[in-house]
Length: 255
Ligand SMILES: Nc1nc2c(ncn2[C@@H]2O[C@H](COP(=O)(O)OP(=O)(O)OP(=O)(O)O)[C@@H](O)[C@H]2O)c(=O)[nH]1
Ligand SMILES: [Mg+2]
Image 1 (cartoon, helix red, strand yellow):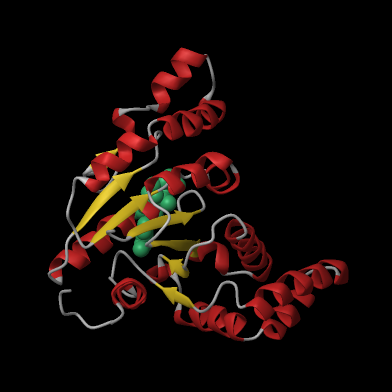
Image 2 (cartoon, protein in one colour; image 1 turned 120 degrees about the horizontal axis):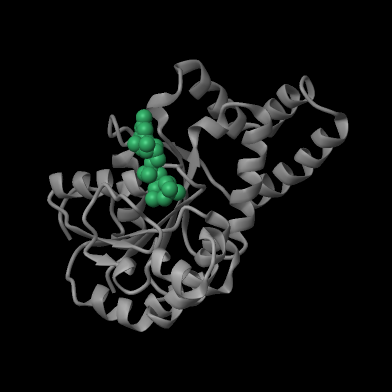
């Protein structure tokens, strides 16, 4: 079964751009990949998807047919996509490539917290899946939003039992000092708790400690890869993670 790599993250975290730049990176290194768009509301995509959910379910038509606004329509669309799952699977399976890169909708909570996406993933195939979770670097710069972002990622993880890589996207937008600070926070939760203590009430610090403690003791989120679709930083590390996971080696030789 060809590996399927799901790109998941908050709205605007850079999922679609990374799908495009990672596909290009793979192709420049003699691998091939197909792209799948699962966002029925995508207006612009930086790549031309090989499989595109908008051909079956478009947000525009759901809004019109069900008389809904964009958020309600996203929920209905997510359920309609499940009905198309078998067809999408057939289309994906008709390609022979090294990787299938799957772009997911911007409304993370729709993909992460509704049963429709786990159902969809099950139909597309339960084996050979990986999830790349994009943390928007802008949200990782200050201690409060760093904690909320980690918490959100952990709650997403409770829904998907698949190998997971934490990615801090758009790393070109971080100053070297900001990047070092995030690395320091990632390494040791006491570092972030002491930075947080300077800014917020003790009760919030204690809650954050409990959240981070769970993440640390279970090593849920692992180490983060900093990536940039602008500079291609981190793309080789993403590739190494996937290659080891699916093909048992991280060298650049074709399987
Ligand atoms: N500087 C910089 N900008 C980026 C990078 N990746 C994405 N962007 C920009 O961030 C914005 C959002 O990128 P998208 O790829 O559309 O993000 P997304 O997660 O697919 O967004 P939704 O699907 O709407 O949730 C766009 O303006 C991109 O050009 C990056 O690595 N560096
Ligand atoms: Mg997108």
